[in-house]
Length: 184
Image (cartoon, rainbow, N blue to C red; front, side, top):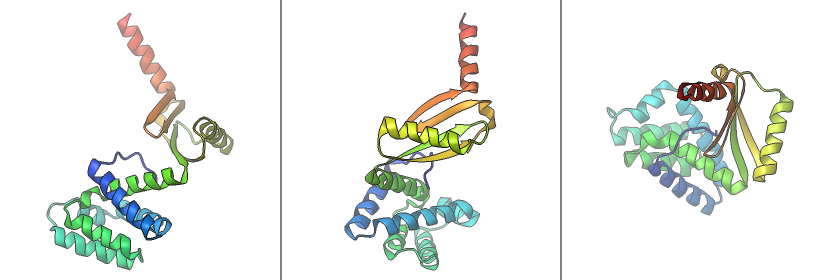
């Protein structure tokens, strides 16, 4: 459920609160899995996305609907109550960012390094394994590598590890060359 979404400060605070509460209640893994399923539901449903983003729905309506969705999706009660609370506080639109922030906290607690590799063509298993090994060696711990294809890169690789971007794509090299030639 790892994404490149930047969490707002409010989303990080809510994620922290839920993380601590779930940890205290011994439900951290269950809440993490359920929050991931909920984030996927929101991403895949135009209606749910519209609900959480639209100012046309009252806080009460959002809380009621999100609590009902949590019940129907068999999400833990703790998460269902959290969804209702965040909606009642007028922060329903922050739910995707909150889920991403919660996922980051969970990965950090488990010692997992998250990374995204973007290439012009799909990576082979051997290439993926090599990148995972390099990241694990340089950053320590397990690596959760997500791969994306972006044909506009032309070739090479963009690698994001946490907030660090390493851009070794052909597109970036051509842009740097173009800038250097304009300055000459």
